[in-house]
Image (tube, rainbow, N blue to C red; front, side, top):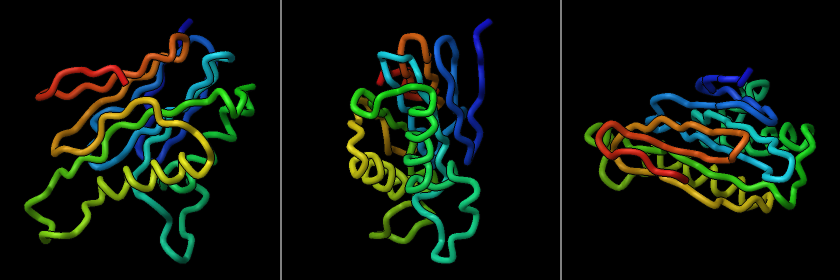
Length: 162
């Protein structure tokens, strides 16, 4: 039986072998997908914000913030047997959904989520091999653990393999 799991906002899910992970309706949130093609271990985080507030509230939910989701996801994937040197990442989302509500010149939360995700992955040496980020439209991301195939789809912009 194939595992099928929706990765909700601030959630982080890992699995190995046959399974499908998905994040539905990403707006400014970012889906971070990690996968090891050798062990077929992987996971997805559905990131809401770039980093925790200064007081460190909600750190018990590492999937909520890009800066905590990346190390937590990497650790969880490695616990399934993935080798750090073969793990790759893909990211999707980070849209600016309400551009008319933000003052000109400010960085939108979606863009901040993308930048923070990239920075966290880069600082841990995890290459980003595919992405579809930005814009002003939502996306749904589907990750097939057996093949490593990651697709992102948008009602207005079709489907892309990352």
